[in-house]
Every structure is written in C-alpha cells, then in structure tokens.
Image (cartoon, rainbow, N blue to C red; front, top):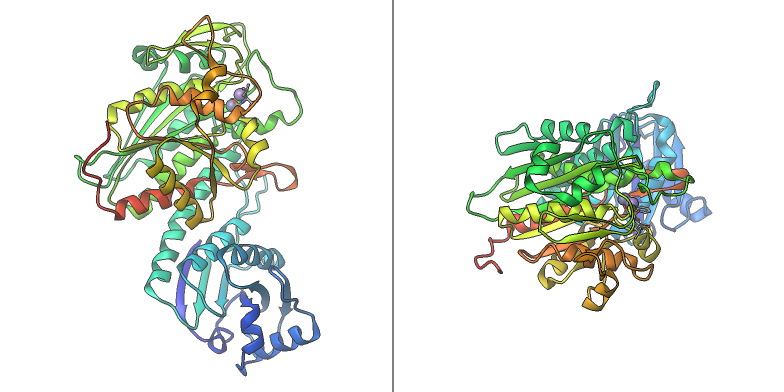
Length: 492
Ligand code: BES
Ligand code: MN
Ligand code: ZN
C-alpha cells in the first residue's frame, strides 16, 4: 500500500478520479464551514438533519453523488482530531467502504492536522484494510493500493510522518503475518528462513544457530524447553549496522515459542490454538527489522530470537528438573509452562557479548499480564529510569501503549528454592512481576527492559488475530535514539 500527501482544497479533491473518498470531519469544522462545494453542502445538511452524528466514528456513506467524482464517499466524524479519535474514525470509515473494494482511495483531512494525526490515520487505515491470506485456498487479498491524503495545510513534519508510517506499517504487517501463521507454517526453521530473507541488504547480517551450536554455548535452559520437541530449535541472530561500528547496539530479544502446549504441565484444551501466537515477540523483532530495512536509521540494532516449540514428550523436561543456564545459574523447573523465561534467560546472557547500550526483550510471557492490563497496554518492566521514560514516550507517541509495572526485590522472594539457584515460578500473586524478576537475574551487565505483550500482541474472539504490536513502539524508540546523539558514557 502506497501513501501520498498533498495540500489541496476539498473542492479539488472531489474532482479527483478516485474509487473511494474518506472525509474526516471534526465537529468544530462542521459548524464553521463555509465552503460551497457540493460535498461540504451535503455534509452541513446531513449534520443539520441529524443524519451525520457529531460523535467519533459516526459515518455517512454516499454513492454516485453529482459533482463528486469518487463513486463511494464516507464522511466520518473525528470530534477534536486527537490521534485516538482519528484512529477509530478511520477504522469506522474503512469498514463502511470495505465492500467498494477500492484500489485508489482519497482521504481528505478537514480541520487542524499535525504529524501524529497523519500517523494515526495511515496506521489505522492499514490496520482496518489488512487481511490474513497465507493458509487460505481462496484468499481475499487487500484491494487497496494507493492512498492519497489531502488537507488545506500540509507541512514537512506531516510528510515525514507519513513516509515513516508507511515503513512502520510494513513492519507491523510482517509481524502480524508471522504471528498469525499456524505453528505448522511457522516452525523455528521457517522463522530462521524469514530472518535470513530480511537480512539481504548491505547493512544487514543474519546468523542462525542450531542445536549443536546452542549446546556448545551452554544454553541449558533454552535446550531444556526444546528437548521435548521434534522440531529442531533455532537461535536467530540478526544485525543491522546503520551507525559507526563503535556505537553500542540496542539488542531486541523476542520470545519465539512457535507453539506452547505447556509441556508436561500441559495447558487445558480450550483455546490452546491461540498458543501459536507465543512467538509474537519474535515476530515483532522480524517486523522491526523489516521497518529498519525501509528507513535505514543511523543506529545499530541486534535482534535475538530463541525459537522452539514447547511440547510434552517422553524426552520432555519434568516438573522438578534442574538445568544449568548459560549464565551458570541453576534453575529448578517447577512448571514446564513457564518456558518463555527459560528460553529468554539464555538469550539475555548471549546479549552481553554485544556490549549493548540497552537490551529490550519482548515476550508473550504471562497470562497474569493479560489479567493486569488487558489488551490496551503492554506491561513494561525495568529498573532503569531513562529506559522507562523513553519506552513510555515511544508508546504514547505511536499509540502503541505500555504501562510501567513495579520491580521491587520483595517480588523475587517466591522464586527461592532449596534445590537450585532459582525456581522458574513463584506463586500466582503478581505473576507478571515475578516473571520479570526471574529475567532480571540475567541482565546485570546492561540497562534492560522487558515488555510483556501477552495481552496486546493478539486479539481473541470474533476479531481473532495478531496486532503487530509492539513494532510501532519499538520503532519510535529506535528512531528517537537514531536522532539523539549517542550516549558517551555507558553504565557498567
Ligand atoms: N505463553 C504463556 C503466557 C500466555 C498466557 C500468553 C495466556 C498469552 C495468553 C506462557 O508461556 C505461560 O504459559 N505462562 C504461564 C506461567 C505460569 C506457569 C507461571 C501462565 O501465565 O499461566
Ligand atoms: Mn507457557
Ligand atoms: Zn509461552
């Protein structure tokens, strides 16, 4: 999907040769508009008669109007034009126009718009027009090809934002694609192939380790999860070098459980299919690399993906088994369903070799995080104030929100055991925090943050599917870093 933006009056836009046109109309504009073009006249009339309600997402659809060249027109109310309102208005407008199968869409932005509004509109449109096709015999591909945004005033920030959003959307959609694929179409080997395919350009590299290499590294916790699976594990190392090689990279670590049965501590049957999404963290790392390949910012980024299935088997780990992680710490596996932290802890130790400026892991880690925050905000866990602020701001700016959770050491009490250095689970209380406290034991060498995306990476129910989160949050974070001068003094 290609986006364009132009400064044009509505009276011009209605003469454009378009399959469909969306007019985003804030309440204020509706009251003061004095334009005489046929569309403005119709809208004022519709507001007057109450046929277009002045509330966010209210849509008026028109067809074949004289004086308007686009066959299908949707006028949608965006109230005060906040990014959140624009997001839901665009979604509603596209849903009303979906049946038109438009290829060539115009969007007229009435009232005051800024760069964040443009970003919200373009990402909402991509979201609403996305459809999963890979495993369907008669897929309905997206028809929408070209979107032309117009407004009375267009500045350079709006143009930059639109180009950036277009690249981010490509990343978000790649993340959705991999997360949506069923586990037999997204094995660790296939994820590794996808990573290799992404790492084609001159600034990219990708290395894939298999069971032998992972054993040599001593990744005993990662191997323990994989030992019950027939599909071989993969440890994927992606590199993007957009800045001087002396500049320490940001390392992203994505949980890549391609299917989580729970292992011997098996999950109940209901909705177990949703555990195909347990590699959404990995998918978000792939999505970030896709967006990096389009935007090429001046920053160095490493992506690490420990990928395996979590299966019950004669060879699978058993509750009570003690394994030795790459860090040397021993772990008592009290629950084989707490496997995410086991694959992540070894990846976090591996991350040390890059002497990173920051490490962020992204994982569908706990059901407890879904209970705490639902699908609105991802859980953010870190003891680093600067990183916390940067990630929170990136979430706010991209609309891909997160919420900081506590990290007090008292939360780690429950992880104590007589039989190893640490247990892989504590009690039910504060389950998302105790999981983060487990991970924190492996991150002493660098500033670190953990994003629990168990609630935000996909939706269940009727709209079941991957969301592509938190690619937008991560990209906003990386792009802000690429613009800011590199930090000279690195913390120990
Ligand atoms: N992949 C799950 C977490 C999950 C649950 C994600 C529901 C999305 C929706 C993870 O591996 C898991 O099973 N966690 C356990 C941890 C528990 C055993 C301490 C959980 O949350 O129940
Ligand atoms: Mn699990
Ligand atoms: Zn899991």
